[in-house]
Image 1 (cartoon, one colour):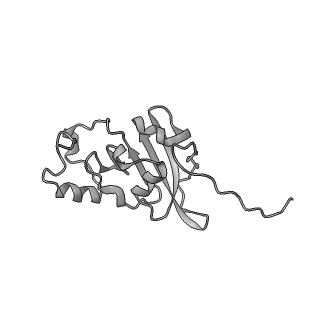
Image 2: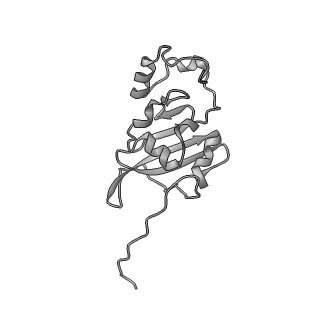
Image 3: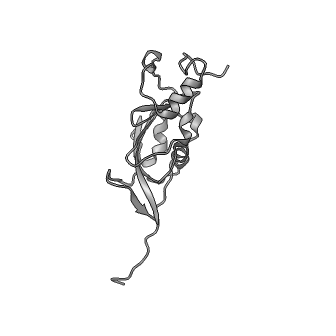
Length: 159
C-alpha cells in the first residue's frame, strides 16, 4: 500500500560467505544504523587476502567499504571479514604499521570513522631496511620496544 511505513530488512554483512560488504559508505560523518552509531572504514585486502573481500575482489586486491559499530576494534574487523589474525601479514592503519607476522598488537586498536586499513598476505615482503623508522601505531611502537630485538629481525618463523 502506498504511504504504508514498512520496516526495511537489514542488509546481510560478512566476508567470504558471498555477502557484499561494499555498502558505498561516504566519507561524511558516522551514520546511525539500526539504532547504533556506525563508522565507515576503508579496507584494502592484498594478495591472497583479496578473497575475503567477497564480490569486491579484483584478483590480487579488494577494496571493501565497511560500516562497523562505533568502538569496534581490529579484532572486530577481522571477525567481520571471517579472517583469522594469523592469516594476515603486514598491516597498516592510516599508513602506520600496526602489525607484522609474529607481532600483532593491534587487535585491541579502536577503529575510527574514516580509517583506512591495509591488510597484506603473509607472503608479501617488506624489506628489513625499510622497517626501521617506519611510522607505527602506538600499540606497535610499545610492542616493538618490548621485544629484545625491537621487532626487527630477518625471519618470522617460530623456532
